[in-house]
Image (cartoon, rainbow over all chains, first blue to last red; front, side, top):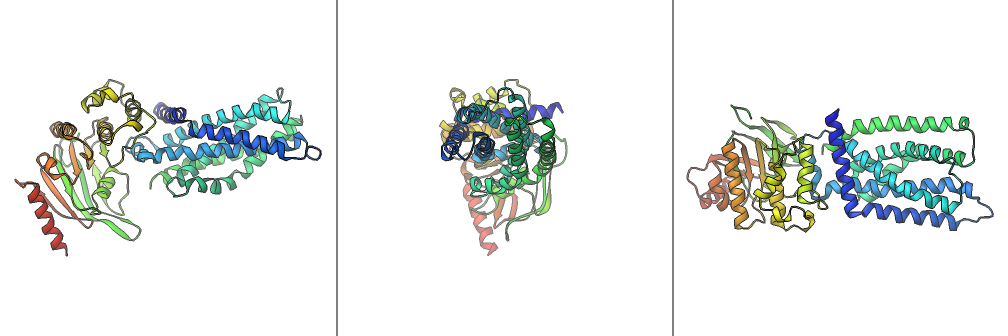
Length: 226
Length: 227
């Protein structure tokens, strides 16, 4: 277990160090997030679409697509100089590699989300400070499932010629349940609805995380070998 | 390191990509302390055979057995451009579970990269990358080392360093399989030559006093015999 954690941490740290040096995915994700939030804000008719109606969808569209840029980068990095072969020549288990990638992606997406959230509050004028811990909990829950499936599919498409295009095509259908749940939950949080109205969506989100995290972990080895 | 028996045993291994068989029924053993060279034209199956031996590809038929750890130097560095030489080696050392006992710096010094060790490897020349790739492959002191064109991009001094490393590894009891076109430089370092023709190991013979020209003649003979 200690070995697994040590290798997982080494892989995540390496991914984040490379990203810190290049800032390729982070800058693209952040620019994309600002752009989407601004475009959706200015594109609507304020007299017919209120802030609270638009805000949850805008937030999750932003997170979903901004995160995609980071997920794409996660395994493209391993394609560079065939670094993945270098990893496979070490005693690193597929489980440790998957977990390392997931942790790296979670930190990456977490930072993008934390930077985007104040912009969201600024644009949509939603007073969420008191509900912030609950909203952050929902964001965390949705992000875990998203990143688990995204990491698996990113590894799957990286050997294809158009991996940047293939990832969204394959990933988006899987994201319908968590993103719909997250949008519904965000709307209820912003509208100060009671917790009892949220338990169904929360359960769906938690079940998605559990099932897809486990499946992704189990399938990763098969994808890794050729 | 196993005291007896081959360090690596390849038994009737075949591999295809799509419908094309790239390696066909190859069998060979390499014993500890022995260096074997694979020669053959482009597309003869040398790189694929090395990748099979490294476990990076699965054979469609046959088996490969090792005793001990395997290291490989390939056409690519298998490292990250955004990291420095030291960071790359430290990272791979961690994955191998190695102690941080100064071996990274020792290897960097051995391969003549001391002054550039804290530079990102994106700034390295082809020869420097090749030396770093060799350092990565030696990090965990493998019992079987697979080298695909190890002297590519190296100047005379660096080539001599690599040849010294090969000698040192043989003395230590490692088994080496080297695929290369640079026969003149490597011929003195190997005991046997495997001639790859169209995916088959057409012959595996002791070097027996042959020089590079003799190896080329023998190869041509085997290619002609293959039809």
